[in-house]
Length: 381
Image 1 (spheres, one colour):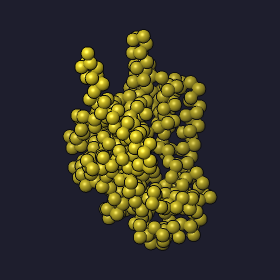
Image 2: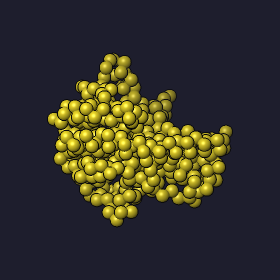
Image 3: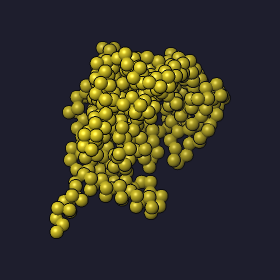
Image 4: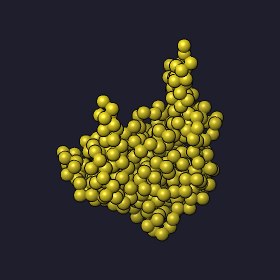
């Protein structure tokens, strides 16, 4: 039984390594072949790639190693997804960005483009990154006027802003598969665990060209901090590898352009936003995808419940173990401010059953971290 368990564990580790390798900007063909030779499960890898949004990246890595045949029947599915994503990137996404940004530009409202289209342009080939929506940011004072402009341009609202929402969602009949999220903030108040504020990001915006359209974007330091906070936010919890691939692509793109990342600037932005831990966690995860960052600038807790939880997050096997951590444990571990850590466990409490479930999660985390059950068993007569 032990040998069978070791064999299964080895296959999971090698499958995870194959997935991490796929997220590199330049996959190492020898590392891909080694993972396959050591037992990586391509059935499991294909299923996980679909869950993590990295199907084209997995196919690219196996193609570089000359090992697409290892996918068996999954190869056709991965090629179909990759071809569809490439067509979207070449035809649909530019049209959708133009349909959204140009009317706002013409009305004197120069929006800030972030996440999806801004990040996808940093990948080495079109279609490697999935995108289901376009994220634009404008100050809250411009939100109503921007909605009027967008509706005149054919966009229609499908979800209104409200107390639980920090944006308005629209769709356009010409690009029905891509929604438009018009933000005035980054997250609802109840979920705010950092000091990232849209108004401050807007003040630091920089001019950019997004698929040939003039707009504003985030500075590189702000971009990395925002992406880390987005990946690690409640209900996300770093559960998709594509968010880590974003780091590998952005950092690699900067290096290729001869413009290395200003890590001191990233550290300053993370401190300003009170999210050094979540940025440090993202960068350590990105090491599995070939990112070399000065991790001493982004220290992580190593003891207690937070340290125990982060150790699980940073495991090489994380791509196949994302459901092993309760999201409240992970949110607590990633949050810098003590008061906000407590709030992360208690908000939003809608009923006593919700409170009971959260308290059970807290208790389980402490028991797992400190081995209380084992110590109690030792003391028992």
